[in-house]
Length: 284
Length: 158
Ligand SMILES: Cc1cc2nc3c(=O)[nH]c(=O)nc-3n(C[C@H](O)[C@H](O)[C@H](O)COP(=O)(O)OP(=O)(O)OC[C@H]3O[C@@H](n4cnc5c(N)ncnc54)[C@H](O)[C@@H]3O)c2cc1C
Image 1 (cartoon, helix red, strand yellow):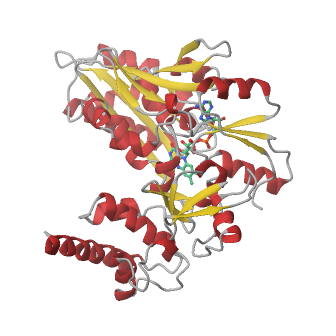
Image 2 (cartoon, chains in turn cyan, brown):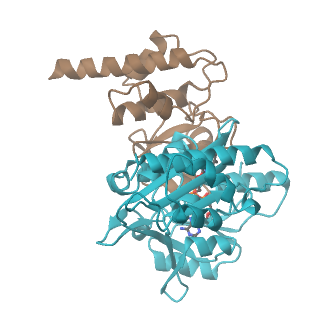
Image 3 (cartoon, rainbow over the protein chains, first blue to last red):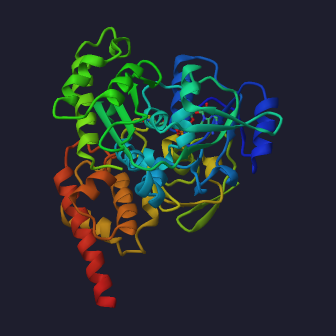
């Protein structure tokens, strides 16, 4: 057997899932399973105690699918990376998410892994976080009293992605004149995994950056904003030298990945590419 | 519990912690599904669930009750191989054969969704399947040939 025994629960609705999650001892949520099942195998191999209860979210309809209202897009937590990639709504309005989904993991993993799992699994290097912080996404959790609790993804990451609640969905506001760029560097292994990433979102108005959000994933910490670079980009008259000058306005504490000095050089290239891509304006 | 595998119903007496790969092989006797890395990296355990290629080594069997599961045993129609299987044979796309079930199923899932894939589409669909013999060129040739075969059969029908 690959796994230690546990009790498997497959609630049909969210209330039941919340009730089980609150009442069961030593329970773990199962979404697409790409992290949980691998983790349970490793823990077993290391002789470490594993959860007694697994609560699968697979049968819960309320947390599947993508929908839009006038102002915002709602991505439910059980939407898979493939579903996000294939969604016409994402292609049309948030192409940067599509770009990221294209490069995540491998085809079978993209078919299984969910947005909720990618954001809440507490691995710092997963990728949707940087983009969704740049898009100022809000996370909608199912509170234990049945009420919805909303927190920005940026705050969630500042709290080290700690939560004992079930994530229902993520919402993003539609904005006009938005330009975005996502640059990521991979590390080769059996399956290439991300090493670092940069996402820039700006409202490009009258040929200037406005309300820019620059989000950095250095792989070691949860994705966070470089406020110094944002201020610079919002204040500058864009020109040929903007991308190069941007490199003199970085919050260096974010890029200091201690042991991996070569990453600093990769960050500089990624930031330059991102600023140039925004200036060229190919993406929405 | 009842599992729908290859359009047949299997009544199985299993526990919650059993992976689909283990149940397919050890309980249902469908040993065409291979287990290799057991870490979601190699693709040998690929099966198709609800038209998508997924990894049975990280899927709990109990979690796919009621879903439509296809393993390599479900592809041929009696003695008639599925076009993708036939193309793998015709193009020598099988060396040690360990990755073949996963490769073929991932290719079938691709062609069912996109009958005329280009080289990039094939690479994208097979990026989770590792061939330890390094036979990728022949595998890609086989997938392209299967796509042509499938579309010519379709054209003849029209
Ligand atoms: C080989 C491999 C390569 C990978 N490569 C990449 C990559 O290139 N880029 C990348 O971004 N990621 C990568 N990943 C990570 C992958 O994207 C994540 O594993 C996936 O998104 C997690 O989602 P899941 O649905 O499988 O989560 P699960 O494994 O099912 O769950 C993980 C944990 O997340 C929490 N959780 C899940 N859903 C919810 C919810 N709705 N509410 C509350 N908590 C929840 C639970 O704590 C759960 O235990 C890779 C993974 C593997 C195995």
